[in-house]
Amino acid sequence: MTIIDYTMLVIGGIFAYLIGSIPSSVWIGRSFYGIDVREKGSKNAGATNTIRTLGLLPGLFVLGIDAFKGWFAVYIGNFFGRFYTDLWGSVSGAEYLTYYKLILGIIAVIGHALPIYVGFKGGKGVATMLGVVIGLFDHLLPLILAIFVVTFVLSKYISLASIVTSIAFPILYSTCGRLLNYNMYVPLLIFTILVAIFIPYTHRKNIKRLINHTEPKFRFKKTVDE
Image 1 (cartoon, one colour):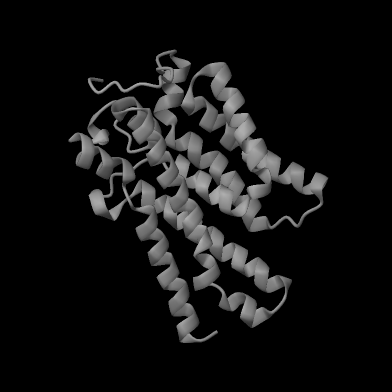
Image 2 (cartoon, rainbow, N blue to C red; image 1 turned 90 degrees about the horizontal axis):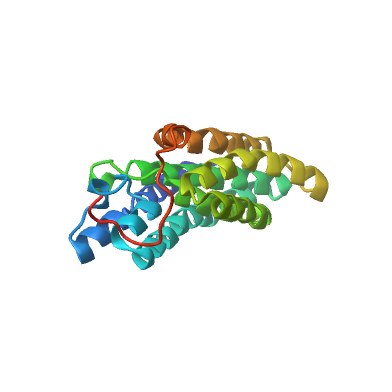
C-alpha cells in the first residue's frame, strides 16, 4: 500500500461522513414548510417524526434519502477501496473490501446522528442503518423487512418494530449463515450485534414510554402542533 492508497481510504471516510450528514428532514422541513422537525413531535430528525409533523409523502421521501445515504456510503467503497482487490487479487482482497465498506457505512450513520451541516443534532440513524444493511446484507433483507412489518402491524409502534428487528438481526445473520452455507465474517457478525445494541440504546426514551404505555402509536398524518 502506498500513501495514495491510504489517502484514498481517508477521503472515502470523509466522503461517507459528509453523505451521512445530509439532514434531509431538516432541510425539507425548513425549505418547504418553514418547520424544523427537531422542534416538533418527538424532536427527532428522522423519517417517522417527519411523517408526524409534515405528512406521509415528505416523510417517505426522507426515509428514502436517509436509507440511500447508508447504501451509497457502502457503494463508494468500491471506488475508494478498490485497491484491496488489486493488491491481494484473491478472496482475501474481497473480504478486506467488505470490511472497508462496513466502516464507511458506520461512518455514514455517525454522520446522520451528528450532522456537521446543522449543528451536529441529527436523527437516530435507523433509516441510514437500513441502507447499510441493504448494501451489505441484501440476502437478509426480505427476512428483516418481514420482522419489521409484522411487528409494526401487530403493535402499531415504529419504535418497537425497530427495536425487535435490530435484536433479531444478529440471530438472522448467524442462523442464515449456517443454513445457506455462505461465508460469515466476524466483523460483520460484530456489526450485527452492535446494531442490536445501538438501536435499543437510541430508543431508550421510547422503551420507557412503551413500558409506561405512553408511547404514541404511529399515525399516517401530520401533527404539527405536538
